[in-house]
Image 1 (cartoon, rainbow, N blue to C red):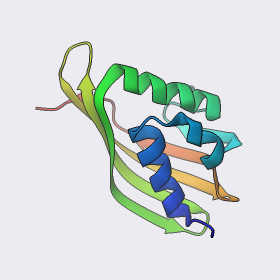
Image 2: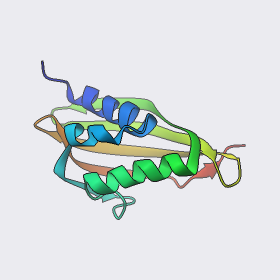
Image 3: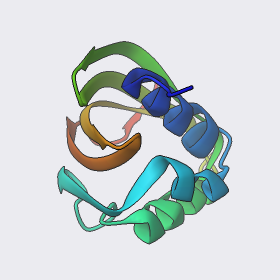
Length: 123
């Protein structure tokens, strides 16, 4: 049974980012994955995504990505998300809003484009 592209992105967010299970990156992300847009120096390939997931879980307690909207059209999935967590160094709650467009090829995330805010303190 093949997964829908939207399901692939939901798994990527929930299992890799929220749970920190970087072992799934090989299954969900193509080795030639390239990120365009914000933080392109961080999310270049599976190895840099793995490092980013580990780093974010080290920096924030209760790190969570919430999907506010998700749309699928052909091989493209667009999601509007909010990241949140408690920053370990000061114990304050922070959030970040982002729009990400993922391209799926052969049931793997092949590329992504993102735009969003910087981390902001929750009031």
